[in-house]
Image 1: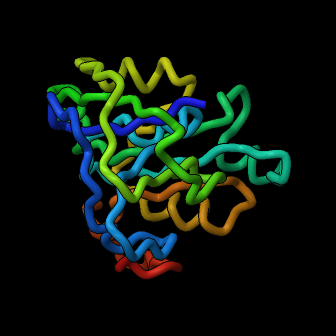
Image 2: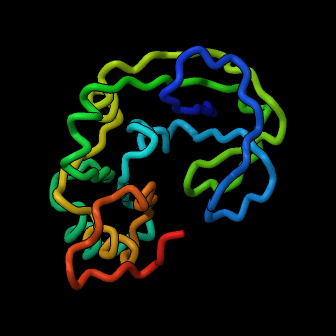
Length: 183
C-alpha cells in the first residue's frame, strides 16, 4: 500500500500533526492526513476547489450508474465548477509519499489514513499539469456551472462518493436545498 498527501506548498520534509477541523469522521486530535493510492484522484485539485467525486462499487445500483456515470464511463467521476478551471490550469501541486507503517486507517472506503505523530515524507513530486495528472488517474472530469444538483443526486444514490470543500462552491440556484447542511 502507498499513502500520499497533496499540498500547494513545496519542500515540506516533516509533517506535524494539525487540528482536524470539521471532519465528518469526528477526528478530535491533531493528525497528519494521508490518502491511499486509489483515492489520490480526489485530491489532485487546489485545496479550496469544491468538488463532487463519485464512483461505482459492487453495491452500486445499475440505474444509479446509468443515470450518474453514464455509458462508457471510467467508473469514477470528478466534477468541478467551471470558474475554477483557470486556477486549476495555472497552479501546481506537490505530491508527498509517506511510509504506511506510520499511519492507521481512519476510513477505508474514503482511503483516509492518519498519524498522530510527526512523519517525514519519503518523496516529493511537483505536479505542473493538474488536469493531466487527473486524467492519468482514469477519471471522467466534469466541468459544470454548478455542483449542487449533482451533489444532491449523488448523495441519494448507491454510488460511493466524496464531497469536498462545498463551502467554497457558488451558492445553489433558487429552489435547490442541500440535504446535508454544510458545517
